[in-house]
Amino acid sequence: MKITKLTTYIVPPRWCFLKIETDEGITGWGEPVVEGRAHSVAAAVEELADYLIGKDPRNIEDHWTVLYRGGFYRGGAVHMSALAGIDQALWDIKGKALDVPVAQLLGGNVRDSIRVYSWIGGDRPADTAAAAKAAVGRGFTAVKMNGTEEMQYIDSYDKVEKCLANVAAVREAVGPNVGIGVDFHGRVHKPMAKVLIKELEPYKLMFIEEPVLSEHYEALKELAPLSSTPIALGERLYSRWDFKHILAQGYVDIVQPDASHAGGITECRKIASMAEAYDVGLALHCPLGPIALAACLQLDAVCYNAFIQEQSLGIHYNSSNDLLDYVTNRDAFAYEDGYVRIPSGPGLGIEVNEEYVRERAAIGHRWRNPVWRHADGSFAEW
Ligand SMILES: [Mg+2]
Figure 1: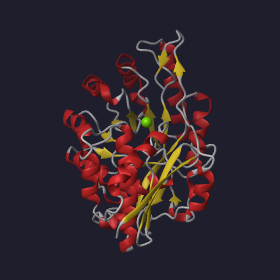
Figure 2 (figure 1 turned 90 degrees about the horizontal axis):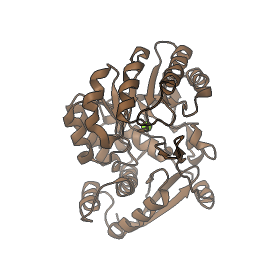
Figure 3 (figure 1 turned 30 degrees about the vertical axis):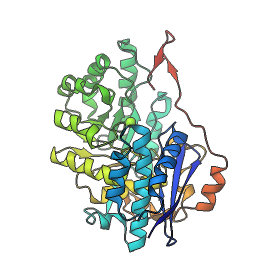
């Protein structure tokens, strides 16, 4: 079997899909994207394609190694996301060629389903508690919210109070047993993270995510001992080599690699195994589309330390298109009582609606982060 063609599609709301074709008529799909850099990642895929054309798609580990190590310069969001989408599509092809789900090729399922959480907002707090209640009404047993709006290095206490009131309202709305993840989104700097982490402890959170940016991971030494709340991070880390310092440091409780940013299924499996060796949990990051989620679910099936999965069904970013719009077998993602069943079809287990993908790619997108500013006019992390 030989790879004949790679085609990327930039589709709303902010995604990029990749189709890899072969000379035997088997087609694989991946989702190579960084939110806000979709066209850069598509260009990187196009460059990497030079090597892949004419190769046997089934030699995934070797292709991954060449595409990672072989360009001399390596790593970072754009390269690793391009590689991630290619890797997902190659696994999809291999699974379809052998008529088994990817999880079977990775050793077989350790679970039938995975608990999922729903995003409930929190940037602009007004409706967060109502959104939490609605998510629980739809069967979710866990939710995630942003903790704060923009936050200065040293900010006033009313910002802290607002965060606490927001979290308290959500806790009150959902009761004591629903998991609440609070994402600081890397927008809080160390001095205020110290305050918030301590003040949030009474709300018995499921985790605090990106309490500081991952590049400030040395701050975790000061932050983690301030609270019993588990610390999660990793959506902005892209490889085993990015994660090794954090795991060796010992203050992180949950790693959150993104299967569309951190080198795909091949690399995230290895990151998950490294984390397991440190007794650290896995909660794959996935505010993305259906192919990314399908890749995550195949990983959740085989990674023992996976305990929850992010997913973007109906999240606020997706106002123009939702993740089920692009698949024909919408029941592949079977939600029940806060869990999603691991898809059991061949490859990634989803059937992409190619005609609709092409139709939406004609519209495309130019999705960008909001740019926030502090009261003094200086840039604020979003
Ligand atoms: Mg996050």
